[in-house]
Image 1 (tube, helix red, strand yellow):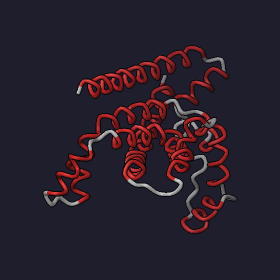
Image 2 (cartoon, one colour; image 1 turned 180 degrees about the horizontal axis):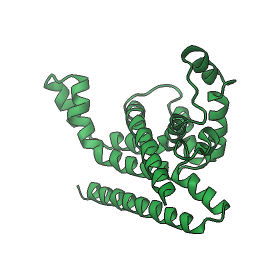
Image 3 (tube, rainbow, N blue to C red; image 1 turned 45 degrees about the horizontal axis):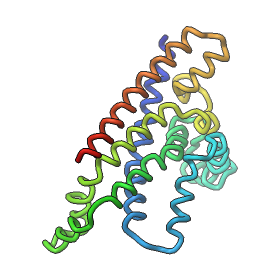
Length: 222
């Protein structure tokens, strides 16, 4: 059963890093699209939402092309910094970031758009800087909607399979996440191990979804 816990810890590690990165990216882009008007805004929104509907294996293929040694990003990293992201846990993090980004970005944009601008305008009249208004007024008003998206993205990152397998492969203890370990256990006929891992990830995901539901209900009441 050690393989199950090792895979779970690795999945939590990858999902945690992916969510931290997407918190910064998703909140920043969500705020930009909620507050700024510019040409091609909705087209950009559509492109950023694509990972939500595009097959993970297709996303994994694109990442493999970009990050591989012959890809322009992978070639640059390899030649300049001697960094190889393919078949590494860092590559799995990048795959999870791409897959889960819309699940944080979309709720963040919706949360920012739902805020009454009068609160921000009142703070501006009092002489508070734009940055201070964001952290002291805007973000506190939007955090429940953002957090609900974060929890859903975390659950999605835990179960990510296609893009991760394409980019990071399945190296036990290094890149073999829980979902990949389940797949390989089933393929190997190790039903007991597969059942244990399925129960573990199911319980974790149910807990996360219940928390997200509670947050949504709390937000609706207030």
